Length: 245
Image 1 (tube, rainbow, N blue to C red):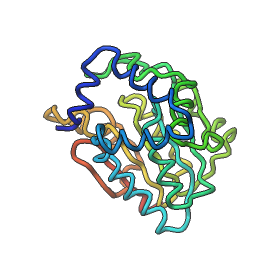
Image 2 (image 1 turned 135 degrees about the vertical axis):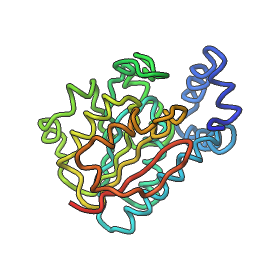
Image 3 (image 1 turned 90 degrees about the horizontal axis):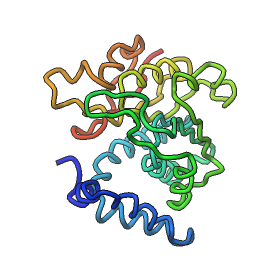
Image 4 (image 1 turned 45 degrees about the vertical axis):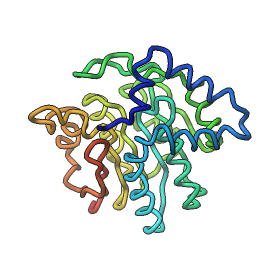
């Protein structure tokens, strides 16, 4: 089972997830990061499965001695951003910048179990949630807007993102969105850069999951053969590292 009993219960009761999030953000910032960690380590332990991949990726970057930025595409309320910030702090990646690319208006279209408007959290809610969980917002740059408008060469220049050993988290669910993200990443990923696909297994229920979602987008990407699998959790995500130019 992918999700914990607590996660499934919270998701099944209308309004409970929103109530829980608001209750968490009502705690003073002096204690809210500890509340967040406690809840993730106890009731919502399903996240620990997906975080094993992140742990391997951050360890790999630390061993390389040359660390770029963290770029996340599809941040929702900020769960992955919070975890990645914590791993970066643990490894003392003090110069790592965090870029949060999201429409902040939900998914742009439908694709099987994904519905237009899903995962809709405002930029303010994302930032507030991250702050309450202990993220240093001075290191986080939100980039609002749908990817087909924001992911351009001009944006790379504006954000001063140069080629490097970046760690990328793609959590945008849809095939069409992932295609745009990979095209955007093409000029900035050097050997040793890592991509984590959060929704790699979203279509495992189909006979041909490789022809759907993120798997299809990666398979069709001209640069996919420059990457090798680094880590994978069969219910959650899959990470690839660039091994040649």
